[in-house]
Length: 68
Image (cartoon, rainbow, N blue to C red; front, side, top):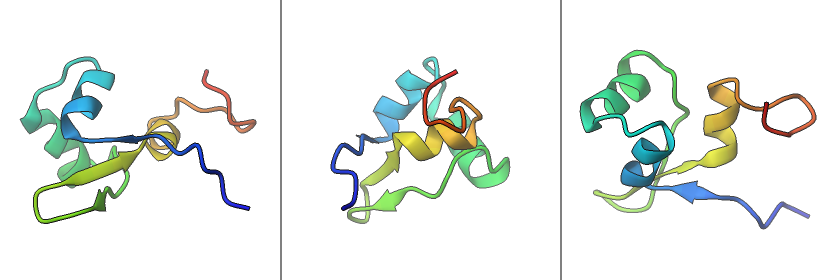
């Protein structure tokens, strides 16, 4: 059975989670630098990032699944 406790963040929430970075920095991390995973597109204007994937991509998760 798939984990039902997946946490999703929109761009504003993700920017706050990453320390209050700017919109431009968020897109640079995603598009140019490859520091963020591919978001899920709900509509033309709504993108959501899986928090577990973000943490893993940034190296904030240990192999056991806990935060460092």
